[in-house]
Length: 93
Image 1 (cartoon, one colour):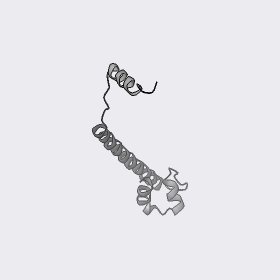
Image 2 (cartoon, one colour):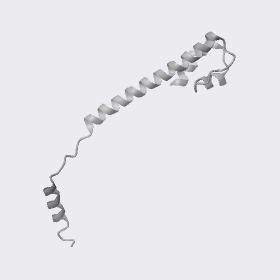
Image 3 (tube, one colour):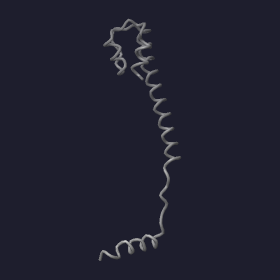
Image 4 (cartoon, one colour):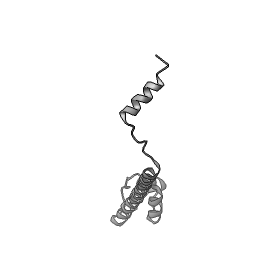
């Protein structure tokens, strides 16, 4: 996502492909003018923003699905557990 945003946001800056790929990793190429440098940083930050928003939405969706579909196993009373254990081990002494 970050890479796609950077590549589309820096298309008109005349950067080499390697510089644009480096910018997708947060490396602003040297030798850019102030306006081009700002545009490159804005493209990177826009890509990071999009990636974090998508990750947040996915996390919320997963949390809601987990809350809906994960059922609690319930707890058993200690006396019931002891009785089941004694019955299960009754013939294995």
